[in-house]
Each structure stands twice: as C-alpha cells, then as structure tokens.
Image (cartoon, rainbow, N blue to C red; front, side, top):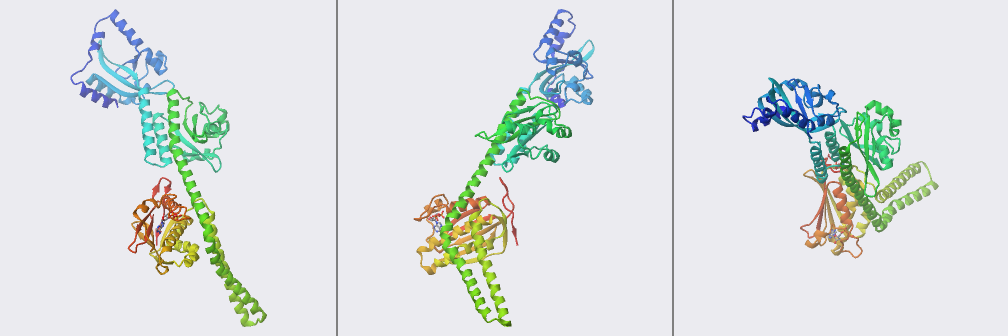
Length: 570
Ligand code: ADP
C-alpha cells in the first residue's frame, strides 16, 4: 500500500527530493528555533513521529502517545510494524528506499492502539537528513470518522439496493453481516430470527458462522440466561456484553464461550412497528470489548437495516396468508352451489350399493354353489362402489378444508380429470360437453388443490358464459400441452367472448357481470397461478368464445421465496 502511495506521490511531485521546511528548521540552526519547533511538534493536534531508517520509532509527540494509548517511553523504541498492521517489518527497507527516492508521500493506512483497537489514519511522511543521518518524519491524521461515514453510507446503499431489487431476505442479511464484519475487523456478525412455531431464535444470516456454532446455540429461547441475543429478545433492548465469562446472561453458556472463544457479544433486538420482536442483530468478538460510540452507531444502523428485509418478507408471508384464506373462502362459498352436483355424484354409487345389497339378500334365500360365486361378485361391486363414493367425498373434503399451500408432484391432465369430477353433474345438467385433448404426460410440482380450484373456476365460468348459446353449441375444449418450458392449460369455450373493455378488468377483484357473481374467481385464479411462477391470460377464439390460457413454468426457478417449481416431462 505504501509502495503504491509513494509511486503516486512520486508521479505528482517529480523533481522534488526534499521538502524545503526540513532544511529550514533543522539545518544548522541550533538553539531557540529548534526548541520552539520541538515544542510545536509536541503540542501539535496531529500525531507526529520521527522514524529511523530501520523503522524504529525515535520520537512521538503527545497526540501520538494519547491516540495510541502508550506511555512515551514504551512507544519510543517500537518498530513501525508494531503500530501499523498493514506495514510488515520485512518490507520496511524497500519502503524506506522508495521514500528516500521520492522525498514525500501521503497514504491511508491503519494504526493499532495498545489495547488492540484499530484506527483508520492518513499518513504524510517526509524523508530528511540531519547531521549526516537519515530519518523520516510522519504526521498522522485520524480519518476513522470519515471512513466510518463512508462505510455506513456504503452499508446503507448496498443493503437497500439489494432489498429494492427484491433479493431474498437471507441474501440481504448475509451481505449486511459481511459489510459489518469488514467495518469491525475480526468480528462475527449474525442475525437470528424468532420463529413463531416454537418461539425460539434461529440463525438466519452470518457468513462466518460455522455449523458447530449454529448447532451449539439453536434453538435459542428468549430469556435472561440465553446469552446476549436471548436476553436482547427477552428484554427488547440492547444487551452489550463486554466479557461473556463474567456476564450472568452467559452463565449457562460457558461451555460455548470456551469452545468458540466468544469473549464479547453485543446484541440488539430487531423490532417491528408494533414493538413485536422479530429477531436480533449481534456482533461477537474473540476478545473482551465494549462498543465505542462509532460501533454503537454502526450496530444501530445495521439493526434498522436488518429490519427492512425481515419486515418485507413478513409482509409477503402475511399477504400470502390472506390470499390463501381468500382462496379458501372462495372454495367454501362455491361449495353451496356444488352440493347438488355432489349429491348426484354420490347418488350413483349409493344406489348401486343398494341394488347389489338387495340382490345379495335375494340370492341368499336360494343359495347354492353357483349362488355363492354370484354373491361374491355382488359384494365385490358393493366394495368398489363404496370406494368410489368415499373418493368423491375425500376430494370434496380436500377441496374445501385445507388453507395452507402444499406442493406435491402431480400429473397435469389427471388434475384436469379430477377437477372435472367435482363439477361433472353441473356440466351434464347444463348440457355442457367437455372435450379434453391431453398432450404428452407432464408432471409438475404444484399445490394440487389450488390448481384444481383454478380449473373448476375456469370451467364454471365457461359454463356460465355458454348459458346464452344453443345447447348443442355448449362445448368446452380443454387442452394440456408443453410449450417453451411451460405446461399450458387452455380452456376454449363457445360463449360470447370478452369485449376489449372487459378484458382489462376481468382479473381485477370484484369485477363481475353476473347478477349473483362475486367477481373474485379470476382474481384468485391469477394470484394462485402467479404464486406458482406462472401466467394466466385470455383472448377471444375463432369461434367467438373466450380462451383462457394458464401456463406454469416447468423448470426450477429461483424466486423470492426459493424454488418456484420443480417439474418433469415424461
Ligand atoms: P364471477 O364469476 O363471480 O363474475 P370471475 O372473477 O370468475 O367472477 O369473473 C369475472 C367476470 O369475467 C365475469 O363476471 C364475466 O363477465 C367475465 N368472464 C369470466 N369468464 C368468462 C368467459 N369464459 N367468457 C366470458 N366472460 C367471462
């Protein structure tokens, strides 16, 4: 670093080999002027050092001693490498040689205080000769404040950009931790989140966390004796533990302190607007340490930045939850209309069961060897019809009951067939003929109930639309096929189609042209399909009716909520 800085200084100061003020003060002017200059150097606001060609510190002024926390007699005699971690001892001769060549240089570096604290500094160094000997004199400006402001600005910019570009919560928080670790060297930054299921904290981010550390802490119940994070989550205020070996919060975690050498841990609670605890942001050290004003500001900034992606993802979860509830409500509300259909669907197997049972009874009266075989066949029929009735009921129950989405592997045309069974009677009753063109077999990872809900909605809408046309024209063509990495479902009816005005609105909630419509069906369909990473659209077909097109991606897609879909063509 010094070499680079010296080179650039050389370029900018060509021809200047020795700064004029050095000659002026020290060249052969003994007595008063020198003592005055010595005094001025001693009381200067910047840290000043005189350094020998071998890198040994020959003199340091008061500011240097105070800033580096050394008594003068200890600081004088140290090597530059002892106070500057970026200046290795072995490269000193080369640095000095360059300095000898260029005369002056200004460069940023770091100084380490006696207690190990790192300060960002800017060094202005000058080479000079005095009474036949070589020296350099450096004046050191503390630029930690400026660096810290830059780092905080970068931290905010980087994390907010990630959040704005829709990166998943985990990525945003990991980046935040990495940036904090860059600003506070040798620290370990982490974010824990409170899980609703068991009300325990678990790590969500922390690029330097090892599996062993995770296992040792997780799950962490909030509480006064659950380390800094558990206590911060419990108390809902910062818990800054300077020495984990003596803190009561860490008394029960001493085995972890020893094993991972976690000697200090500062944790802040991450709260939502209502004051509910979402998690914690923490910085740990392998040395005892208490945060200074700057570190405290960094902790607070990092904590409020962490809350942004966490809150966003919570809001998305809640929105998703509301969509699920709405979809559930919509399924339940259409159930009333489907009950007639259900009754008819069940009537068939029930009457078959009854007929076969009666036939059994009649046959039992005149039973012989042949009769036993026949009774066995009847009983077999009874079982089959019973199972069929059971399946119809199970499908209805599935369709209505569940609210939380659950993806499973489903064959697409089978889903169409099963969804149609739910409305089979209604379609027969309304004279709607359904023709299915199943393309090649495709399996997709979808929420079966939700996709069946979309199919039922589109089929019932098509039946509604075809009410106004002659009954021999009420034909609904359903096609399933594979196109451009998507599985596509097409529903083409022969109703009046959709006007240009309406086509913009039909997917909006509450838009309906039906006297008893809710206008929620297509809005829910769109939400469900978009949750699967897909698209739903409508256009008018050549027969004048409407064609609804649903396409769901087949390949695995990494979306904000992880993989969207994982599907296979057979
Ligand atoms: P609802 O069925 O309760 O009206 P939807 O959201 O399912 O709610 O449908 C919204 C509107 O879209 C319907 O009222 C109708 O005007 C129009 N629509 C839906 N499907 C069709 C179709 N296949 N043909 C013509 N118009 C349709």
